[in-house]
Image (cartoon, rainbow, N blue to C red):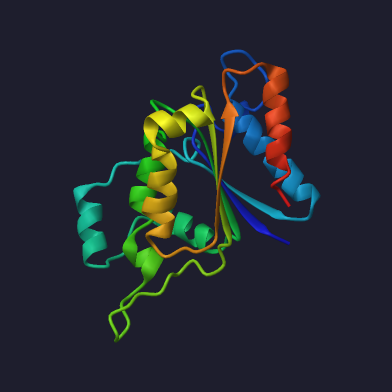
Length: 203
């Protein structure tokens, strides 16, 4: 059994997975189908729906000061951190806006992925130990209009450089990192085909 944590960033929230005009989100559809596939295989699903949770992505002055002196942090942030610690896999699911992650996801990284949480206290030899010892794989699913090859050529894979290299590799994570692209401008048939390929990674 695998503990899978889904982190959805879309203003319409996870409830918008059905194909209702002006109330639909393909990111939510992906989240819904991953959840169903994972549960059918006997895995456990935990969903962080950032907009439904009314998560505030802005790091305040008071919070930064608390973090620097290792004080007691925000209750919601601590809850997210505990759920991340319990995950074997994390799936970030989001639309691509202006060729980058939405602000909510960036704020989630800023506020939740603190050095103290990720690396713990320094040992006597001055080294830190990565705290996410259960985590094996991180998936990033982006719904975007820019084809993957063009994004790589024009924008140098900015989103994976930030999330994979600048966050997970930098903190010492040595597990698997996988990026999946769904063309948001494709026909329904082509998107469903892409989603079918994506679901093969849910095991």
